[in-house]
Amino acid sequence: MRESAAPHLLRIAFAAAVAWGCCTEPATAEDPPPGIAPCVSCHGPLGTPTDSSVPIIAGQNRDYLLQALRAYSNGGRTGGMADVMAGYAKGLAESELPAIADFYSKLKPVR
Image 1 (cartoon, helix red, strand yellow):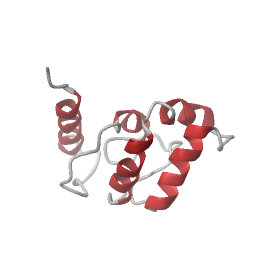
Image 2 (image 1 turned 180 degrees about the horizontal axis):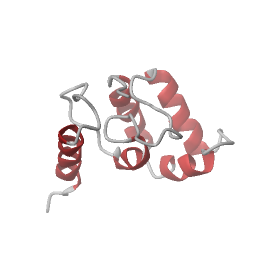
Image 3 (image 1 turned 135 degrees about the vertical axis):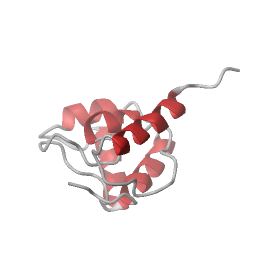
């Protein structure tokens, strides 16, 4: 079976983000978890978006992130950007959510 290029592309995106100065340093050497690509599209590769209207999720409480992802996924969260988040969260497997929440909670926000 052929290996997916997605994990390799995500590592390259993280390296490029650091090289281009969007963040001072990666907060963890840990590899990003599977399923994180939709998060990166808005929140940035290290949870600190360049668009100030998008919330910083780096360093956010793990349980809060996990609860929020589940609420977006099951339609329990409304208002603001909930429709956009729901579209992304519904595309994630329940088994991916804890790893995503854990990953972002360990990052340091950089602005």
